[in-house]
Length: 51
Image 1 (tube, helix red, strand yellow):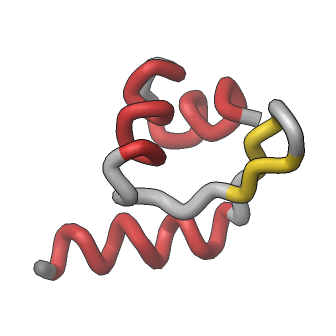
Image 2 (tube, helix red, strand yellow):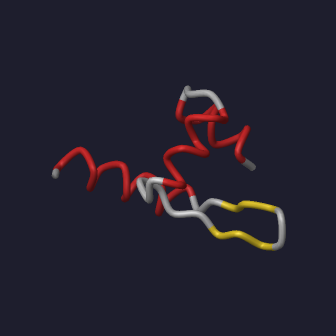
């Protein structure tokens, strides 16, 4: 899922990892897998830009 999100955001997968670790985008960890809700990611990014 990280690679799909990276493509949508037009960034590398490492940037996605850094954004998750920094709390900039929400992620759900299930075991070793990481899942994203696209709508919540967009909301978080918009909130970060407005701040």
